[in-house]
Length: 161
Image (tube, rainbow, N blue to C red; front, side, top):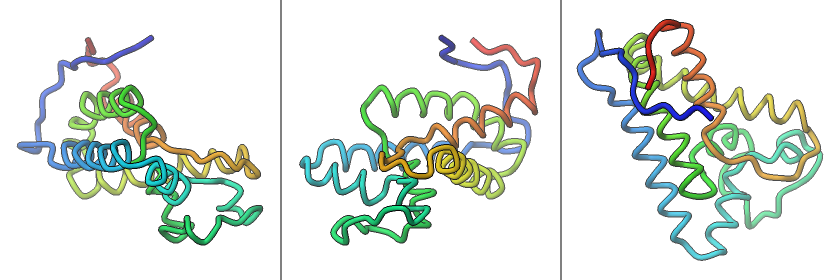
């Protein structure tokens, strides 16, 4: 198993990775709000904000009490929900190690757009593979996969501890 702790790649174009840190903070705030909420809050968040392929592809309908955002927004909102501390910890560790250098290469705004597009792409791919699935997809893994891929393309020879 690969667990990145640090890379030997300093920032060259930006002074601080505001978007990377902001995404980590937002993810932990959403996690705290849902994790420490009642079971009803947790279920409502997962069903209302998670990406459910069968709902997105109009094969099923979500009960009205769980319609927290329009269906199309769940292509993004799912990526801010996490199942447990290990789930969010792993995703945010990868974002911390790799996100700063991708943000440095792209700039703040382009990195944010790229991150959100990677999240949406991950949800869309999941939906295309399992269009009738009624299981909610949650977690930032799609976005993180995009960030790690960009990092490896930008810095293929950097040492990672």
